[in-house]
Length: 130
View 1: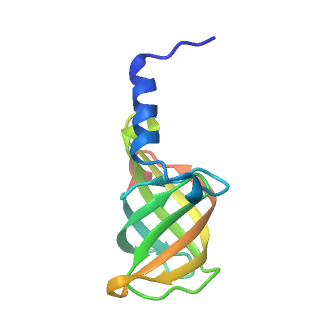
View 2: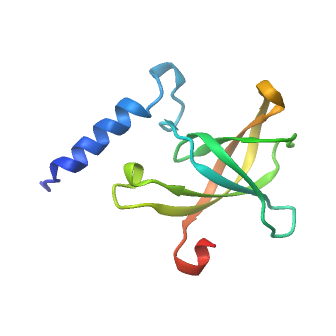
């Protein structure tokens, strides 16, 4: 049986205590309450700078984030974010996710909360990360 350093166990406990959502909020995949910088690009548009925003929740199957305007359900979306060391336990990792919008909700202040399911993803390195 492989032994891990105590720091790995400590980081796992911190993640569970600080970022894990309550039992009533769990879905098919465990979600973590993380406010991470996020670049959103709508796949139907030409490649551009996209919208810079932040996540509210992140899981292996989806992301909840905010945008300033309305979004249609089933819209294809590209999301680029950097997962912190506390999640990866191996340093920051930049990831590009492709998915689609499954739900939106208008929040206080006119912001729109968007739930997007992740259909596939890739880890970015070097020039791909730009």
